[in-house]
Length: 255
Image (cartoon, rainbow, N blue to C red; front, side, top):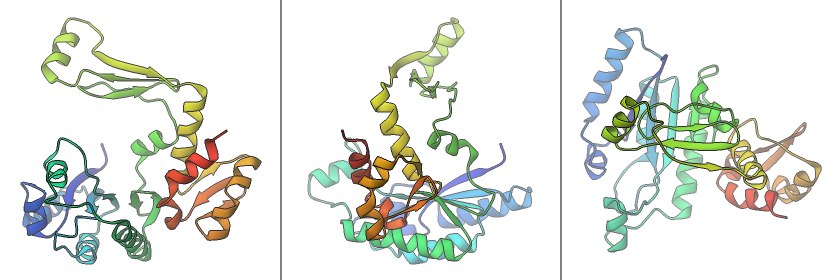
């Protein structure tokens, strides 16, 4: 291990309370001081943007306070409404509403502008790093590298088949202690599915996708709109293109 990740999410106490987070803003600074004091200056901060309109929050202020802690890595995620969660139930009842597309885009692009101006590389749609501090672990997922999952609920992938372990700890431990594979499920990706993942994961990164002539042809309108660019044999999305990525993936893999 050479990096510690802190799930900060926001530096606004009211926002942390709304998110049902148990840590305080003061504890974030204390944690960073402890890490620096122990020689662990290589830490990452997680932030969440695109909160509902009803939540009074300054995204600009959160970005500035994150930069003031001098992290080497930042993960910036847009809030999604998941079913069977408090936010999902609030949304169903009309108590909350997900942030609109305009707010999502504005805050995504603001993060890109401020963090890259501060010297960070926007190397993946949700991740920023100082040069040389990119996440090796996560980058293996985006490049399609094989990986092994060992713990409860852990996922593994051998290039063709994805598998996942039993989620419940006691069940996982029972299987392991009885010398039984703790496998809970698996799926084998067909060629079309592997190509879709290759396109999707490639476009997520600043390296882009190694594209065919036909894929460049299909993406020509995106290049003209400033949402993508051609770099040698790779198709690379701009930040505005990342906001529309799902649509381009569909266009590139459709028969």
